[in-house]
Length: 249
Ligand code: PEP
Image 1 (cartoon, protein in one colour):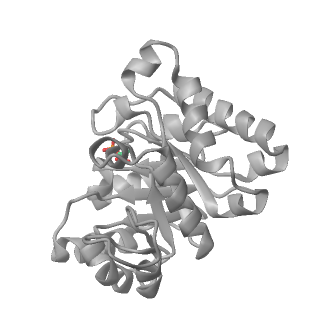
Image 2 (cartoon, protein in one colour):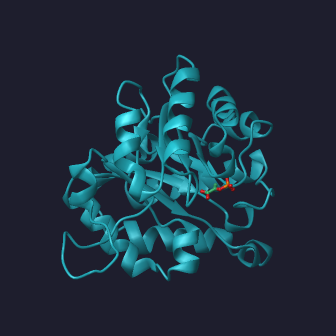
């Protein structure tokens, strides 16, 4: 059966000391839970983060990676480099990567393929912009994002994929999708997986919600049957808030 997951995306925040302290703080206050907890610090501190999380159930994951194994790609980080320092999971397709770094479907597809080639797990983000929702195109946009980057994959590959629905209008804005809006889209995605693959694959794929999840709205979002946890930005930067969100599942 699918896993429940709460993952924190720290983006370009926290210095080295803050990184270690926040991991220690989260580890010290983690409740007894079956929920998988992941944290994504910036690249340069990943190795320190892996060391800090060593004796805890927290998995340290990367915010991005390059599509090639190695080579002349100045400033980039490869999957094998991540694995070398103990990182086995990567976030791909975050809306900030799509918007500010021009990551489109064909590039994301190459990154997905690379991660799977070396047996990494992927947290794949997708979601519509405000104008798509206002125009009523949000289901089409989401279907296209998934189809372009993931539907070439065979069934087996889906064991390594977690989906994260992140409506762009709700990221870092304080504007959250309601529990009903999240459930509606998650059910649509699960149904799409069932059509494209089969019911068993659809039922065993975790679908997280991301977009201004806070301690005061987490329970409403997570109580929906197709919402399997959250990808958390701002509220993952405070141990107390992140722990409260984990407890809300
Ligand atoms: C995110 O960036 O993935 C995110 C969900 O951010 P926030 O929680 O701050 O909206």
